[in-house]
Length: 270
Image (cartoon, rainbow, N blue to C red):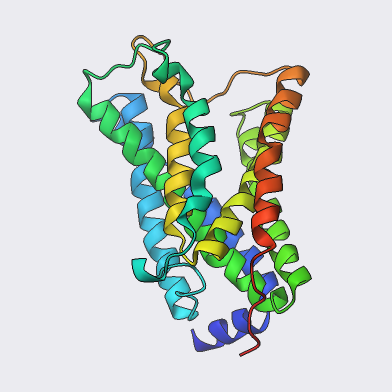
């Protein structure tokens, strides 16, 4: 194990890509078919994600600790958190993403408390594993390689965010989205990746990014828990106009993230 740690720390950028690929593939493992012996497909799908994401998040945290990256990953005490106001734009986007709930368009199935609990815990688990993996492990390793200069910080953030965005190709490969929808998801995944990376580096904490990631996804998926909704993991096709509109709406997240990064100090050589 010591030799593996030495290899990773000597080749941090390359190792981070390999670690990301490993944990990402493991995160696609599903146990919903077995769980359907005890509950319906929707609840089984949520519980499968909660269990897999939760277990992998713990393993990733152990890897981060073994590599000595706990502080760089943002697992810091509240007393060290800074600039929490920077989450403001994401709170606005989350409110817009859940506007159907606010204006009463969606008839949420509040009566099924078990479904609502699993729905919420599932999106907490998504925010947890994606932020811990990308901003907690991949980004700090890339900053070890390139973060000693201002340009290197941008390079680490953009490359780690691009990896995060491209990971959504899995939805195309697994027939959960069509090509155009996947391309749109990759695009705004990159935009949000830069914003989340800026939150972690400016706040000196990963927790605000985890919360924002959860809140945005949770608010945007309430349709799945409306009365009479037929649950499926396959997303409907979108038009080119929809894709361009989505990119335009989320482009400010990229620009805000890049603006935030201007105040990020390069990593000290020591």
